[in-house]
Amino acid sequence: MNLRIYAYCLMDNHIHLLISGEEDVIRRFFSLIKKDYAQYVTSKYGNKSSLDRFLPELKQIPSKEYFRSVVAYILRNPFKAGMSCPYCYQWNSAWIYFRQPFWEMAEKTIKEYGLKQFKQMLHTRKVPDNILMCGDVISPRHWILYSKVEEIFGTSSDLFNSVSRRNTENDAESFLLQKEICSYPDAYLLKVIEGYCKQFGASKVNDLDSITLRKLISRLARQYGSSRKQIGRLTGADEETILRFA
Image 1 (cartoon, rainbow, N blue to C red):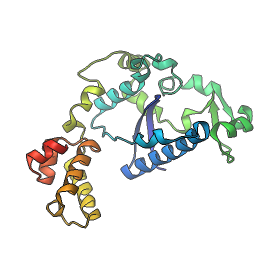
Image 2 (image 1 turned 45 degrees about the vertical axis):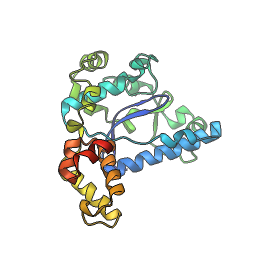
Image 3 (image 1 turned 180 degrees about the vertical axis):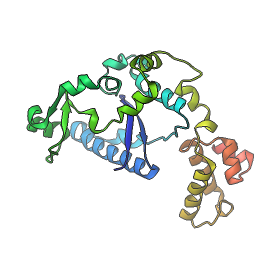
Image 4 (image 1 turned 90 degrees about the horizontal axis):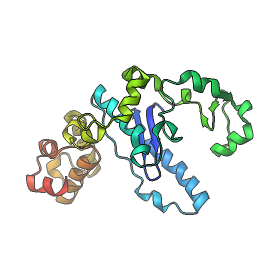
């Protein structure tokens, strides 16, 4: 699967992933995560209904500065929730960056780690020969593009200061409120709209019935972060409809 993962944080009721790849590949990746996690939850608790609301919300990264803000925002989550210092939290990627010599020293082959223990941990019978373990996780070199984050921040101090400091002008939370900045470009969304129309047997937006149009407007706003201005520009919908459903 052609994906690159830059940062992650697993919380008790949501997860954050900073990844790159084609949208359909990202959504397929998320579906696989949800499927595997559903199996785990069912085996442990006997009920996976809590995952029904576990849905992806994608945001585009429009600039290098925004990339920095998103990394800091993701890694800051455990601290904001009052759970832990980001660098002491087991379930995020803060411990990986600028520490390659340390986690390389801790790496073990599957045989050194224990084949039986590995199979039990990942609930698998198939074990690749070239997998390395680092503590109780698969070595970051296999699945995190840590070098990109290190390149953008430059130094461990810069990353640490960004994670520690809340700057409302640069923070990801501030960017997320500016949907026009975060939204997909018009050319991309026009393809989305075209595919949506074909799905309902329409050649253009004007051929959609009112209910289907409302669903399209809602989808553009919630799934793609489109502003009301952009939705109006692309769909030609009237202002009252957009205000109600975007």
